[in-house]
Image 1 (cartoon, helix red, strand yellow):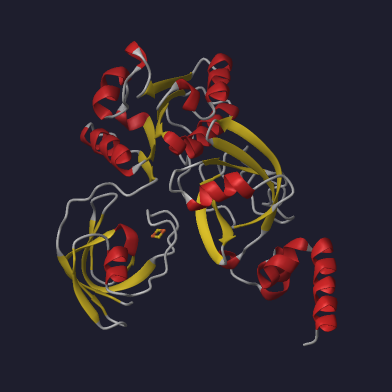
Image 2 (cartoon, rainbow, N blue to C red):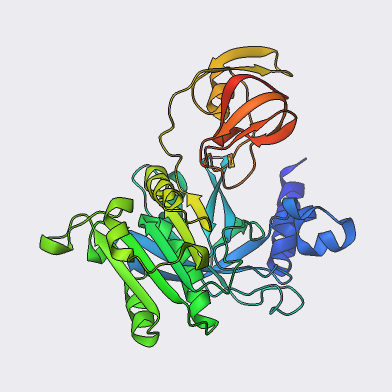
Amino acid sequence: MNETAQTTLMDTFKLFESYLPDFARTGLFSPGAQRYTGTARALYRPVAMVTHRTAETADTVSLSLMPPSGYPAFRAGQHIDVAVEIRGVRHVRQYSLTGNSVSPSAANGGFAAAPLQITVKRQSEGLISNYLHDHAFVGNRLEISAPKGDFVVTNTNAATYVFCSAGSGITPVYAMARELLASGKNADIYFYHAARSAESVIFRAELEHLAEKHENFYPIFFLSKAEGAEKRRLNFKTLAPLMGKDLAAETTEIFLCGPGDFVQDLQDGFQAAKFNALHSEFYTLPTAAVTAGTVNFLKSGAEIVATGNLLEAAEGAGIKAKHGCRRGICHECKVHKKSGTVKNILTGAETHGDENIQLCISQAVGKVEVEL
Ligand code: FES
């Protein structure tokens, strides 16, 4: 193709993109195209425009994103995938939706008609978070996904809600607590959050404002780098005395979110105390006991001894396994297990035989056959 033809083609595409940006960037996956093609929702890749940027703390920003028309409604606690291209490679990360939720039943025809919000904490090794901090400014466009996830409040009639979070793990639970308060329920809501210092508590001003407005809302901060009595860590041992003996396990819903070992400690503590309505979201995998099993990757013909999770085992064997979050949230690493037993690293549950498993949170127990 000569240069003039290329220039004309590019000019035509830019004109097309200026009128129909979503369709131009996401082609067959745009909502418009789906009306004709019926493309599966899993492949829906809308493009949202950054409309606002707010500094929450020194290292955290909230981005308001205007999705295209027809974008689905969502529940507090759900997340979206955000895809960015860095040096020619597409990377995807999950971010909780921290703006006001629009429940499918309340929304206009099941569609969200307002901007979404995600909140991004800069991480020292965080490729995507650093990219968003440095490049996502008002007017930029980001490829996102439909809302996903079942880390949401399903029982709205509990007597008490307990939210525990650490660091950026505050994002989904903040959205859930705010949604509960906005619903007018008078259940007690205890909101325990761990951060380094008062200044690094994301949404601190909003939480304090909510506490002033709602007498059933109790935000309590655990600040690991504070001075004097304020200095304390959040774990089950420090939390248990604060909760009191009156807290009834049968009528309490508990939500935990943060780094793996933080969530695991609280989950174990609450389980031992017989609180069964437990909901956890892990931002990293907890430290798992090393157990050796044998995994046979049937399609690749590799059989190896695996001591960690099966995603790492596959990668160690030179097998390219589809994956996303590496922490049990996105389900991108789901494969079929033909036989054998695996242990879920997040819950400790063992499952057997023919089933689909998430490689990143599964450990082989004995011999396992996986179709990969
Ligand atoms: S990679 Fe996301 S669930 Fe396994």
